[in-house]
Length: 356
Image (cartoon, rainbow, N blue to C red; front, side, top):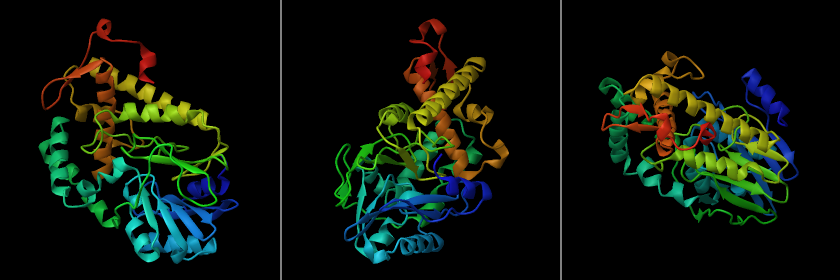
């Protein structure tokens, strides 16, 4: 752990300070309304003619002011922003992209896989997306009385997004055009289909977005806008960054840290254990639904304290583990609503190590 002030602020339930992390690199906390993550860490990369930002924050007045204040501490105004590099299109990372571009003229960069989702998530295709989500939740065995609430649970988040079609599409391994920096985009799907990390090769830094966080595991959910097996993608993406030659990780939440390989191993172990618990639950209760598995799992808080979007995310995360187990021949599902059954052990390829 290197973000000492950031971790202390987390413990004290306050925003951390704006920090000069290294010469030419700043960390700016931007608050997230009514969310246990509390804030997103926007990073500023100084250029010879201004500054680039990595992620932007939610589109709220408070978040916008925090971004402006952070720029001012670093010696810049919003008009000095030349680029907005977005790790992924969730509102706390992408939400202010449109407002920032309008105020500064900055170019906005996204990975193509996330850029392709914008119309369905924030544009004219939203009704279709809600209908698809309703069908998916029904397949998961979510009771009809709850399905409508959960399928529309993220609709309220759309007001926190000022949409901006990307000017630049980030391709894996390509150097980003930032004068004075040697930064490449690394495609790390899982948390979203187009999630990217930014590797500063000269400074040996990884701006990890939500891919690798110091304390929590990012939500990896089956979603109507996700590939079929997002947890498999995520585990592969973790392994892909594990042995990068870096000194420090700058995540989008919580605090800076070192020992990337150690943290990746912890995340791999977490999902190994979670897969084992999910498989055991299905084996002990043949015909169980995803909804029933979800309610029986241990979460960071009691189930009756989880509501709305967070409850839907829990269902999606459970389904992601079931789908990965299914792809490995360890469980199977019936027709809708899906009832999950464990396969005979003799029919299962591999052993426990497969789950990691």
